[in-house]
Image (tube, rainbow, N blue to C red; front, side, top):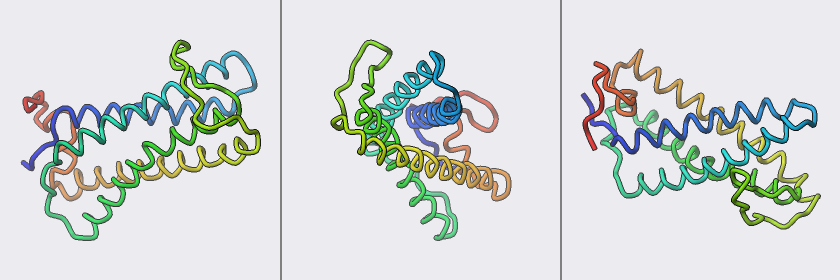
Length: 184
């Protein structure tokens, strides 16, 4: 079996994956709702999720910088390059998407108040023209991240079911034999 990521790296990976998928789904749903208390509640939840994603991304990046990932599995050079480019773009988007959303919210004059209790400073000054310019960027970057995530999942499944090279099992929460993780 190939070397695995640490339990902390695995937990951060899956927690961030769940947060991003949920926030993306809520984002798609809430934009189609008419103005209502439910829509406002979902927008606030979406902002909180964005701040949580930003925080988790920082923790994950710091963990990655301090803890080297396991050695690469033997694969063709083009696949290794594609994996590295995809991972780097994903890390960039983990920050860019929530920051673009925060900037849009600030420019539109809607403060980010985490859990309704912790007001965050405006990321940019309120400016209607800036808000209109930023709004599509938050959406576009989110769709680019969604496309990269789908490609990442497809590649992991290809490695698991076709190549059978252990790539997916290195980041799966349990070993293939379903025994709990025992490494730190």
